Image (cartoon, rainbow, N blue to C red; front, side, top):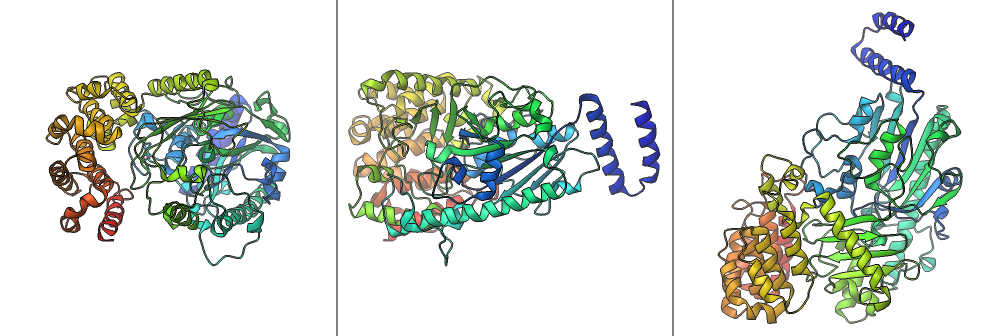
Length: 634
């Protein structure tokens, strides 16, 4: 090492340009790390948007993906990989943090919150270990970057910018497979729409077949782009020094895949090739062309990268390495979640084992297919909803446009499209209870703050990160809030008195779930408990007023409906409340349907854009209001 230092010091004297000096320092760090612990592998990630396990090499005969198939023949395919979230920003938040977004207050689409002090994004940790880290080029996290994250993040970012001898971590992300590209017209179809597989939940129409065929066309185009990156790796003579990953960022961009935490929305194709030089880092099940049913997820990617680099995961990481020097034993479950999607509010948690998927709906009074403007741009969504309105769908196809049960259970071995709910099956009672217990244990273990309304997460956190607030029982008495949510959303009859007691609790989140529980039970419960809900309209907490207002607005007397509408309209201006309260109020008003007609003129004059909110999220209120006014004016 002494000889190395002297030699490199002489080189430093000749490195006069600042950029050259920066490269020298990086190279010195990398060389020192290599001398201390042996050579480190380069790591290349090839990623794409909105793509489930639909490569030809995954067994999909309709797909054409020769370049990625060739990678699969040299690598290991994780067929049970989950993205944890079924939409891009929360899924990428899971990856970049190595943590479950519900523990960070970051499960809602484009919520843009922050990590706790001392927590870092994985590229920062890799850079500390001597890696040159580049991202080409999407970020789209629900988290603020805690300092400098990437050496370069741009459409020009490439491993070729590193110092000589420096190991690299590089991402190349392709957007051609994104949901928006499914509906781009005009289009010349290469895959025959007549041969597309239509899942049981979609109607079999020309529009649906064309969308599925275009999705596969885009996958083939993406495969060509991936092939070019792999060729660059070979051209640079780095193939034998580089571990290569491929994955999509969640399930397909088609409706009921994207945005929904079924297996169809969470299952992705993670493929990893480890060259002979680094076989010591391979997991026990690794073999060229192999397939493993090990349960892995996006939350595991950051710890796995650190393990490949010879570094232990951080204590705050909630995933575990599935390869590298610190490979962990396989775990029995994968976990998923859904929060707010664009302008629509919802809350779902999901667990799977090797065979079954369990879904816990905490807002079962909301339909699966809530109107999301961006989703309705896809032809499949529009024709699917039109056919529902016309009464032309079968039971499996109708389900998406109707309210949800509290619990769902699906057998992936016999029901790949997840349309036969086994939650009420006596034969599957033990499976249901096992997965229900796993879901609750996970929620408690990660300190899931998603049981608070979105604006309440920020209010309770204050200047702290939501993660810090979530670990403070004084600010977040989790046990009683989760218990309230479970009771409210259980749809269990005969618990109205218990829900009423919740509405007198000192904690406003408990009171919120009490009102929500009465709302979920519909007109009989709301009419019977109208007096306590009327008191809820005067509650100091806006979300209690909103839940009470929606309940009375939908199911109360005419007088109750009018008063509720006044309360909700008063909460709707974002410049007077905030973006999250405004959006919740607008959703509640929309749920009232034609009963909200008297407020049409007032709604046309309010400001629903909160200039204090994160820029990308600030527009959701305007999107919700546009649809609301269109419906009221129809």
